[in-house]
Length: 424
Image (cartoon, rainbow, N blue to C red; front, side, top):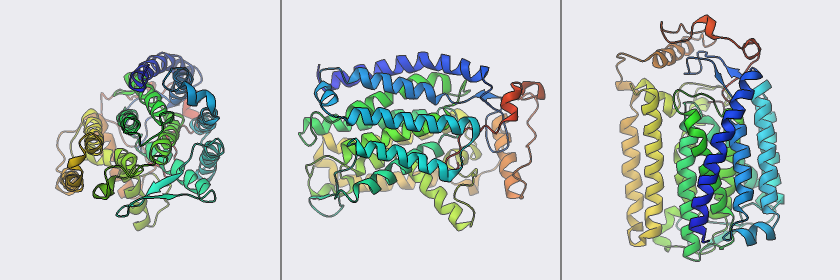
């Protein structure tokens, strides 16, 4: 079985396994009272189970092991310790996320746990070995003294980027599904071009991640029956970080020459993950300018801006899925048609202008809003007036009357949809 067919099979297996496991996880979450109640800093309007990421983690791990037995990946899977490191790191991140979903972990403790997971990857050989410097030919080979630091920064950055966009139903799962699918195609293309080892684990990681997200989406798309919570967001971030390091940090040919400087092998995954990474960067800059804690949540993320522009919950999610798809297509196109590579920076400029034009909240006039948009607007106004802790009044008929707040154990605990070190 070739690598392309093997990856397609892995996506299907992961989707089926994760879809089935989510039913079990949802039932356990409800029985244990792991339910997120609506509040002014979230846009869902009814109590919803959380910690669905446990199904993603287990589904990914099972599929990763199964996929490693297929002919295309069997040699590397059985011949190295890297797969064991990936499973162990996913386990660390899953436990950390579960604890945070149940009892809430402080930002420093969460970062420490993410660094621990990154070090597990590093000591098992899943790390960056080299990277491309834009404008310059050749690659920079990383010394062993820098590899642990860059691995930790990469894992923490990607994990929190995915965590921050987990603000709308289906957003994080859909974005990561598209990004990991594109990353898998990119890795397979580099293997075909002999720019990446045929035994590289990156495509296998990306395929299993893509399938797990697809299997979780039917449960998580608006209106979500279960949230992935920190458990899912951080596991997905870890897997994407591992896949990008395996593919982008270990490609050894200066593909497409210096004219294609902007999309070096490690830069391609960054552009594919452009939506969560840019949103995270803007959040850090925004909170720094306002002189507030970087860990303080706000309602200024891209997906919230889209809703305030008048887009509904589903449309906002679909728009961001579309931008992720466009970004992925833009960077994958030159790998198949390299003569077009010089035009890519201009295409990216056009895309950036389009994004700026689309996200113009200063021109918004509030019209008829859905119940969730009314809740979001009320929460935003409460924060602007210095009363972010006040509970916004929900619209009549929104299905959030007091009797809907069952699961007393869930109400008495401080559950949150996610509590990243840079809270979104």
